[in-house]
Length: 344
Image (tube, rainbow, N blue to C red; front, side, top):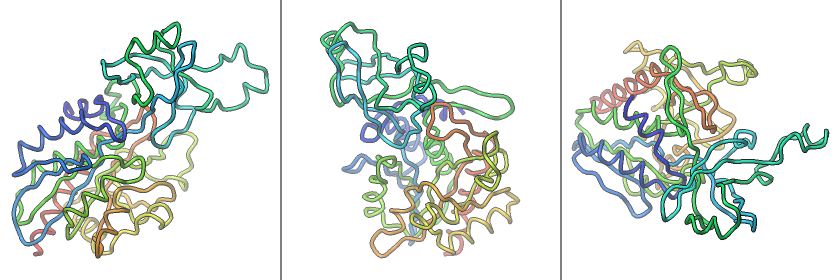
């Protein structure tokens, strides 16, 4: 889990994935024949040769913030990059990434002691929050190197919980990136396997669109995380996916507006799991979607599927996942690729 810790603690919002990309480049160079970066910033690694090609995808970017305005008193107003539930932002420690280095800050808002009774009943919106870096005025903030357009991430470290659970920021989708590296380490098949770490997934699946156009694979598998619902406040029918129950194989996401998994990909993944006695879960999603949505519509079409690690508290700085599920995901995807390559 040392690599997952490094990936989780690395900072990289959409459009600023450099630190994550360099970590992955060093790891993928150990097992792949060719590693390069495309014009948009996607990291593409190729391994093996053969008549057919498969694309494994995981996105590098994490949700984050960006400096929008510095007021005269030295407080920073920000905008969000990616989807947030505003309540998860309040009272978090953050890092502002400037041209001169990192600047520590905290997200604040009007304290409850000064709120009227009606105000305390309402959710504080992101637009009413600000970042305090300890400066006395706008000029002092600028002297720290902070300027409009600087990106902001959460100041959170990776940690182990009881059992085999781990917690950290950016598990969406650094867990997928970790699995990408581990699968490529295992594979030795008669096919061209492309490991693609994409940019800007959280703001429109942008990197996957250009990468898939370049690779144009015969099959694509996206490595992701998905919402687990095995904790208080979530009914089983809302989210039946559980931790420690194996990877989740997507059937449909976004109520069909995103991906409807190709039948051949579903069969490959489920039959591989059953043959290898790997526990798995089937997911019919109503919420978000993944890079597979744009990959499967590339050129004349690409059969695609998604294998996800169940994760609690997604899109927060305290995401929780199981080491067991991560290992099972790696095993399932590696075995599925081997079977696919053997079928010719």
